[in-house]
Length: 400
Image (cartoon, rainbow, N blue to C red; front, side, top):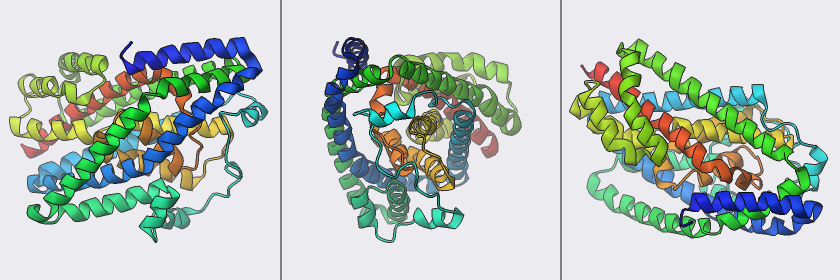
């Protein structure tokens, strides 16, 4: 009962029961969900901004590693972008967010949509590119423009990374301290997550019945399929082309760290075993493994990126919002570049909220997915550490 994931699952079940019992009257619980969402909105902008700067500044250390650092970073960013693209395609093809009555959605207290969200005209290519660059970063922070915040944060973080260590260390320490304070605030907010999930689920079941559960299970199935394609086709293909290793041996020895990753849902907790397997059983040099795998556990989040992109497509279909070039660009850039600051973000909650906000998609329905969040997390962490090992093998081959 002390485990937050268990509490959220119980709250979700109680919310379903309350929704069945009260039916239309269950909307009286909607303010509980609204309170939780408002607290998340309060924290998402400062946390994403600070963690992105801190993460990008810390990556300055990769310059000293030369080709090793460049190869690692390029592999992680490209495979994450491929993962996002795969998720978007599967989301568009299988449409997990379709199937609910639009009039019921608009009438729901929990799933309110800002006026004009569905009818906003989609900007063109250059408008989208220019729109990602803030003319006033402070205005972007005030307005909560996530994409502009990430672009400025990355730019500033890279600027910090090129400074002398004596100059940048105090600034990075301050950023890390602010991040820790924000993480503490997030933990406090998450204490009321079960209450928010209960309120939102009760209202959702009272309004939509079991149709909404069918949509959630469809999202879960599509997410699992995308992860399997990435883990069993895309990553092995990169290994075969660039590392020329035996795929049978790779998957045989990776079973142990994959089981640990699945059970703990933590790339950091799996790191020691992943390093041991890569060095002793896959023949990766200690220097490469010691550099690539800890960095991968910090910034390689292809599994998370799949989830973020699918959730964005899910809620765009849920609300009937047509995604244009600008929205897809925002999803790809936010999910891909946001992974750099992911290490400072506890759990998936705030970054997936950032992806939705960047694409102009309401986040009010997000807690309905929290009941399965632990399972989502276990699946994506398993894919993340598999990608770390693939990168270590490929980079080691390049170095040799």
